Length: 214
Image 1: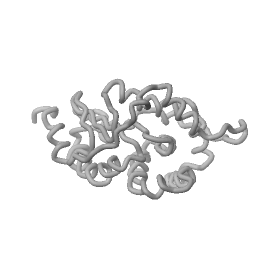
Image 2: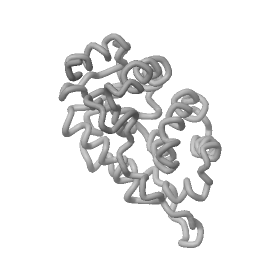
Image 3: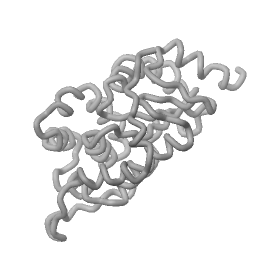
């Protein structure tokens, strides 16, 4: 298992996290500056696979996490082919941003239409070094969003939407409180939290005992 980025203890509390988000928030705009509406689906759960699949796997990840990118780029394709597409498991993706750029990227992904969410996630992880190390990550993210059909106006509307920002923050807080998540990626399988990049065989080993008998 690869090492994961461990968070400082101070950021485990809601107040510092809230202050961090506020400090990095996009500047306030006049009512006429942003006319696009935030989609009602922006805060809904994101599920990869059949929502009725018998086994639920919860993934907590940050789009700026290198180990998360490793999982998505090298392990997830096999997980999807052998476990998700066959209807055995569903993966519920939950945001656990590690920094402001992670929040910006999570906001972008949640503002595209639900059917484009996971394809865009794949692009963001594949091109992580390009946008996360850019001088202005938001500008690069906005261009990637445009390729997924999201206008800059719509992206800015989402960046200014407090309910969406709160939902992204709450996802992280829930991961800490409910599952003891303090690093990414983390996976909750059968009530147990697994930390770090799970090789496919380890992932399958954790899931198999939970599958219904053939």
